[in-house]
Amino acid sequence: MGARKFHQPRRGSLAYSRRVRAKSMEARIRAWPTRSATDEPKILAHCGFKAGCVQIVSIDDRDKVPNAGKQLVSLGTVLVTPPVLILGIRGYSKDHDGKHAEFDVYAEDIPKNIAKEISIKNIAGSMENAESRLKKIKEIFAIVAVSPRAAGLEMKKPYIFEAMVSGGDIKKQFAHVKESLGKEIKIDQIFETGSTVDVAAITKGHGWQGVMRRFGVKTKQHKSRKTVREVGSLGPISPQSVMYTVPRAGQTGFHQRVEYDKRIMVIGNTESDKIKINPDGGYKHFGLVKGDFIILKGSVPGTYKRLIKLRSQIRNAPDKVIKPNILEVVV
Figure: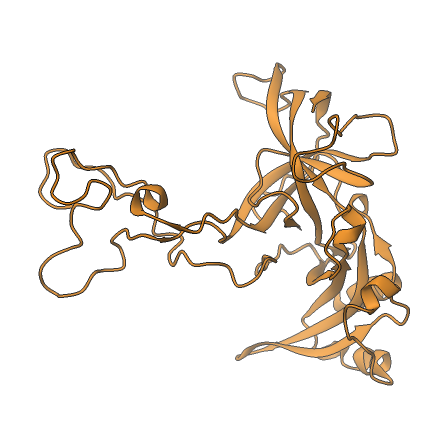
């Protein structure tokens, strides 16, 4: 940063370069946790739509922390989690060139509200063809669909994505998805209260912003030449090019991000009277939450109504799930 009296680290992280707009409103999950071969097969992902935030009053059940056993008030994010439909099965083989999709098998009876928005059909004998190729398959994925209308949103077109199946051998995984083909799976069939998940989403977009907002660059003194809200130097005189490490103005927000270790504090349904989740008049920009929902501890990337993908925890998975002691949810 040039000759200066006080040295400090660079402004803005290079971990997320290039800061460009996401290609899709739907975040991609590229890594999946692995379960033991002795475990039962399980689908590792679900999804929800962001509704708003609440306050959670709970007892801190962590060990070896100053607040252990004390009452805590923490931020909670409400996600509406309608059931996902198991549309199909996809098997991948692996070689030195990477993964290759060997077969797709789709459900026969797909609900009209989803079938009219997509064009998916089975080839004759696709199930028998898939079962005959299981020896070369290394990974099994469930093709799932979720309709935003089931969460009370106006969007008609469903989101369709892959969710990995892990646990047991390939034959057990295939049989597990085959049994659920064409059926709906609720959030409590995949995750439980107190478990920890990773969330993938597209952050809230802010358009084109300058270096102050985008990288947190410090403003120059008021007597600076030409401008105050710019970097002091774009780099050396030679080479005659600006390095990628120099903060510049550009796109801010609408990036794909994955946040790890979000604890599920509450899994519930609005039809039960255990927890009042809706404020009077509903959540701002969203409305009333209807049906299944969860409350995650902490914040979640993205704006209201945005799709949030939930994946089983890939880092530091605990041996035992402890259910949180919730005293009150303040809406």
